[in-house]
Amino acid sequence: MRRRGPDVAQQVETYQGLNHRRKSLQASLDELRAERNAANQAMAKADKKSEEFVAMRDKLRSLSQDIKKGEAELGELETQTRDLLLVIPNAPAESAPDGADESDNAVVSSWGQKPSFDFDAKPHWDIGEALGILDFETASKLSGARFCVLKGDGARLNRALINLMVELHAGRGYQ
Figure 1: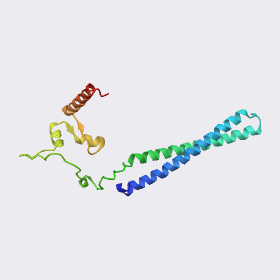
Figure 2: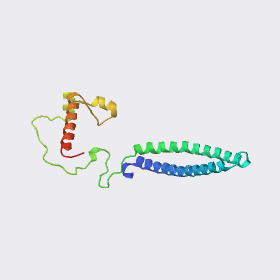
Figure 3: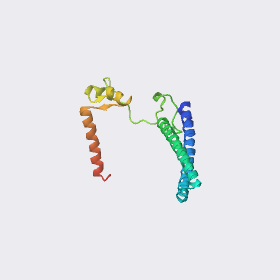
Figure 4: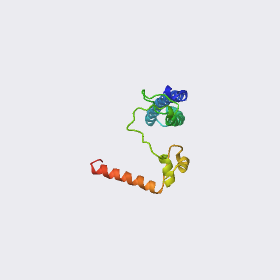
């Protein structure tokens, strides 16, 4: 993960520390709950007018308060660990080259020849916007960059292709 940068390495270390604290707290809470259950059983057998009963009741209240505090802290730790897991990226494969952005990517394989045209070829996103079937502006408001919204005939075409493939594979026994 250090290959992803110092920020990611720090996030992983922070997660590991929080997760260790969370596991320790969970174990402590389990012990407190077991102690509370044993105290409940002993209290049920004790004489309700005895001093022993009053002492057990006070101990039970104290245990319940400790458990409540621990559960609140555990909930906070679980939230923090979950939030960290959502931002820590996957570990890169050993064979993956390091790079700052996609311009540093290495071409692993290619197929065929790059065609040459006697006109200026347009990328698919320009054609889609010109046809009114792709909407990048709305998409950027919805989810950020590298996403597009299909509109009108584009959405219908996408749905038709999905249905075609589902029917094709279902007809061949795929479930």
